[in-house]
Image (cartoon, rainbow, N blue to C red; front, side):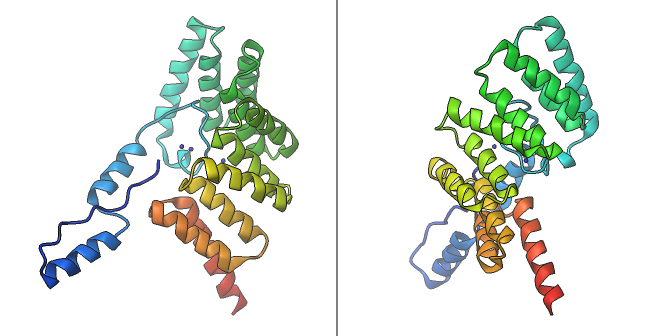
Length: 240
């Protein structure tokens, strides 16, 4: 379980009149406008496979045209055929297999990449993502820890590690690692969401709700946070 920060809406110049001042405040308070909508739509059309960024439960990829992913699979197969000893091509191919739902072949390609380059950060990160998807949390954690060892200043390995700790119910360790990730990449919606999910898993619903809303202040279309708010609302309604 994706890479992005959205800029706040721009503010119109105030001409000194009360009416325009009111309009300016309204624009300033908006978290989202038409050009940001266009930017998000364009970003969601870009496929960037194997670049070792974090994705949350494949929410981003679940909406992609799988025919296009199939074409990309053929492309990376041809790249591997042409340069079989290039670990980058193996990582890209492995991640594409993951998107297609073939985790066994994904693991195979990622392990070949590591045989070729034992310090390949992208291979370890994507291997951790695949293992986590399979529910093999011990293997996922080992791969994530290797990422952090290789590059402790890259937030993605820390984020992945923190999310695995959460699923292992190691909540204190999860929070410590996620705070480290947040210090490296403040405002990242994946990090904010994962901290919210950590609160939710511990039954801290009000805090989780506030954190999810914080994530939406950076990206109003962020699906994970929207789903999180829906879960909390559903739990609240069931209590009544």
